[in-house]
Image 1 (cartoon, rainbow, N blue to C red):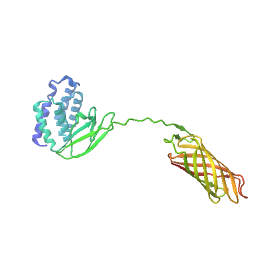
Image 2 (image 1 turned 30 degrees about the horizontal axis):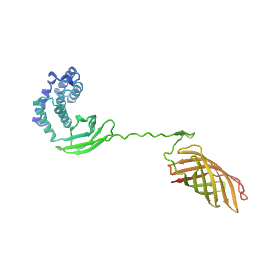
Image 3 (image 1 turned 90 degrees about the horizontal axis):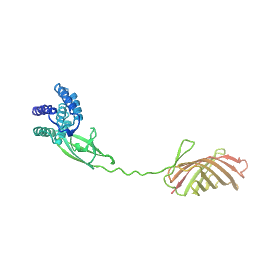
Image 4 (image 1 turned 90 degrees about the vertical axis):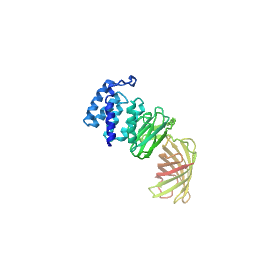
Length: 342
């Protein structure tokens, strides 16, 4: 540290050491007697070169009795700890108080000018400014009015601003030694929350069936594969589906497979929502040496991915009214497929 600056700081510290003996405006509030005792302890620690201990005591004294003169002790101690930016901010707060001794104000102004050659100075504004708070880098949050001019070390620094009823705002700037940068943050009001009502119904599987947020189209396309494990066969239904009411839908489809045909059926959803247990019934007709009629009954689930697309899985039984010779009349026929709607 330059000798001239050290001498100036020693003078500032010596002058501020007597601050507790001078009359202070009672409107400042706080515990003056307690602060006086703390100042004496802090000065002893400073004289013993326990700067960390002295800083802690001075900061406690200022918290108990926020007299601007104590900021001189804090700033000088911070300089001894080589925390130049923090020291400069303490001196700035002393100048902003506008109640200091004119001689000391002159000295502090000169010290700040020396420090500013190696620091960056942020000129910070927040809109709306009333009741706004700032956080500069990793420092604690403070009133924006106390941090309008803030010294920082060279490099990148992030300034955050907040206020009740507004979204938090931030701005990151890069600053060099001896440079001044303006940081203007405009806070946006928090959006008004909209209340939406949803109905949820618990089902035995532990899933919850939530209401689909938008009504789906009544008409759609359907494609379902019917699998016949006992005869190692399968057929695919490709056709259309239509909602007769909110839970009842009908299907008409072509059967494509080794034996083609047609299918007409219906399904009923036991619950509304995105996960819908269903019961289904239908009439498959195959053409194999003539028409072969069957009756189908099934139970399953329909999962609505969104209002345009749903997946269906069923466990079904089909009874063949007039099967071909050698074909079992009652068959276990599971099915899996999907529906698509506009």
